[in-house]
Image 1 (cartoon, rainbow, N blue to C red):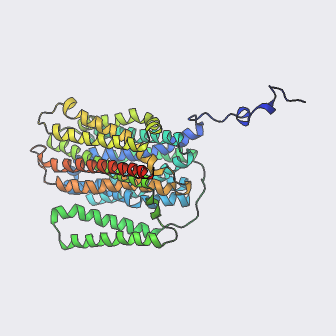
Image 2 (tube, rainbow, N blue to C red):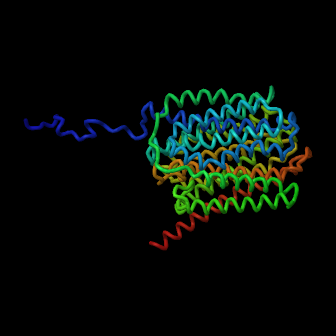
Image 3 (cartoon, helix red, strand yellow):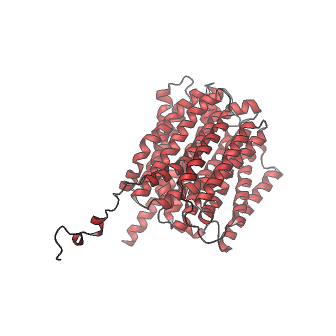
Length: 481
């Protein structure tokens, strides 16, 4: 029989079995993205709720500003110090197993945190929660980056991932404002309920096992990195209060020794926690520097503003939470189109625009936020909207830039590395900022200005570094041409 124009032999494979339209995902893909996004929602929810509750926690447990910052930094140190181990564990042990186990630990630690009556015990539970998050976060992100192909699909997925974070952050502010007015402990119990839902959803949705990679976990590298980071942060926090005492000098030497040993070990072990040659990829270096500047500056800004509005201006927790909520709302509104913007303009222009927006937001608050009789719409709202715009443009772009061009078997490493930069940036800048504002009184914003100057400077440095990297790259291209 001679093939006719309508016979199957004249059809291409695509016509016989059409390929999915780009951007059209199956219900299974949406479900996986939803579960991974819930982990991001949980992390953002927890961070924003604790930020609002800090003044109430301090009053009940008798903690000063220096002690309160450890409630935030304890979480960040557990998180940032072990993110690389968490990312590597996800690659080697299986993303689903690591994700589920760490979620359960997170929920238990949150429950215990709501039950304790001692400040040091609360800080201990926060460290444990951070350690758990260090495994859930890179596992969730690597689930996304290995499920969605690099390009428009992954860009879109990461933009939606950012929406979960923005929703969690905005929800955390408002919910914490309501719950703190009743009892700050409720802000620790709520994540337990969320964890239960995420664990159930993940158990049902995430594939029983994605492929496991060959290799071993570099526990020595993880111990050196975590110990060195803890020693460095302790030094940064303590030195402004005590000066260079014998203890501070000892922790400084310890930090340098441990972190130096970490890089030596990573160059020698067969299966390093961090393949140091990954830093030869300039885009990854730029993305991680941007992450340091973005989260390092914003986390400190949120803490400073929370203390200022509640302790100095005597705002109620809910009033303060609603005031800052537009930051999360603007992220939720703009993030859905972030993937398309990345497709059109690329990651670098998006990151530059984000850092510019952060600098503008901090500058606005510095010049207008100290008004003793503030008009919210004029003095505060523009700053919060600019910061939301910065997050909306920058978060997805940083995540895409930090993971593009990386093989699937190292997506956990790349994901853990960029999230480590976010968290370590937050820990270091917050430690310095709280030292600068430790003498703040109720006499106005003057005592908080050194901290605000710091966060602005960090954003400026991040912007200048990003511009310099772009100019250097363009110069190199011009030279080759």
